[in-house]
Image 1 (cartoon, rainbow, N blue to C red):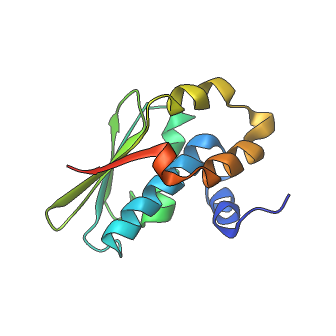
Image 2: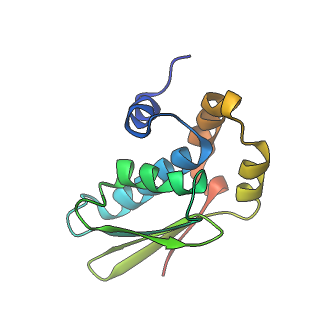
Length: 134
């Protein structure tokens, strides 16, 4: 199955695909699109402290340019995945809309991870995320 280049590159970076790393990719893209280059950008990712939800962090790192090595990404424990981007006094929160996390957890399957990643890669952003300046 041919993957869009962004997903193929994410798969190489993370080692496999899955719903949470794909959602993280999309969240990071919102931050990068909103704030531009990662210089001065900071991300606080909220997630359960173990995989599979923790994979959202790799997706955010991959697409936002915020990385652990640069010290501009932080992880806080939370039962729901979300990320808050900060730059030059502005803050933007990206979170899943109600019901999506439950659906992801219910339907997640190692055997269908490519198909599921393609689905979450293509869901319209406005259906998947709540995005708000905070």
